[in-house]
Length: 367
Image (tube, rainbow, N blue to C red; front, top):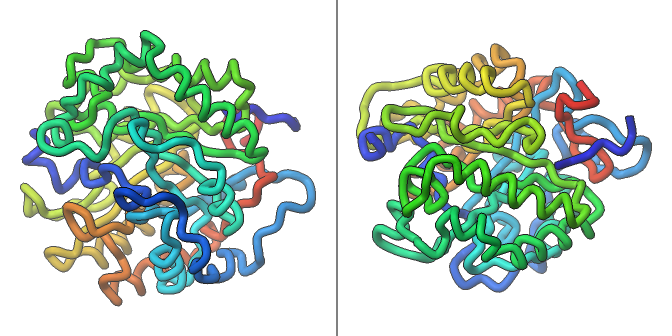
């Protein structure tokens, strides 16, 4: 928890649910971030280079909305990040990347490389083996990562190593722990893998409490379900509570797999956003979103995204999933989409710069 120190239907709905966002973050077998060949990032959205001097400010400031990015390799390869930023003429304020419990140990260099580029690091922290195949990959059939094992303390040493590592960084880090838990495709979803009702909340709190005990108070805890759909688990049975959550996230996509009808940003997100408002007044971040161009609708969807987003005043950030995976969600694959995104992101409300001494807006003690 970031503490302020100063004042289907899965197959049928595949085009709309966040399953397309399965593990990203680094290529299989990669040993570390590709730093030596990292291109220079373009200027920040405000036109100024990131700085950490001066008194801390709230991130994002009231009335502002940050735009973040997730790519296939995250901080392990900066070329796609730089290409996106240059194409849309916007420096993302956040970089989200994945780390899995089976293979990824805490590496401060990953986080430092993100911060060096003036971006808040958010790690999608996933208790599973993302290199698995078959049902273990598609349906979350990984008994080694049942929620009951997390609750039994089998992973406490691993969790504690991350807590101590993040505590030592000295700047905010977002942890999006065990996301899209209301679905059925990850081992931590209560509907699969031998899990039981009520275990997800307990597991979230258990992991959170280990960080608290380690003094890792620089964490922004993000609870991030998928947009609701027929057959999804009810959100109210999965929310850990405001004591354990700083930002509420949500994943949702427009695509063509399984459905052909076009759906706008509002069509995809509004019902879920209303449900989230009923659970918590924490700020909301669209932690994964994108649109394919398989039916030539990506440009239209992006323009509607920027028109409709201001209606949702509790949304403080949007993270675009710039990945060719299961579907091609990349903006950079379409010049028309690039133009639409660049024009939308140029609005003053998205002129947001992150620095390591900013205070995350949490609706606790800052507006």
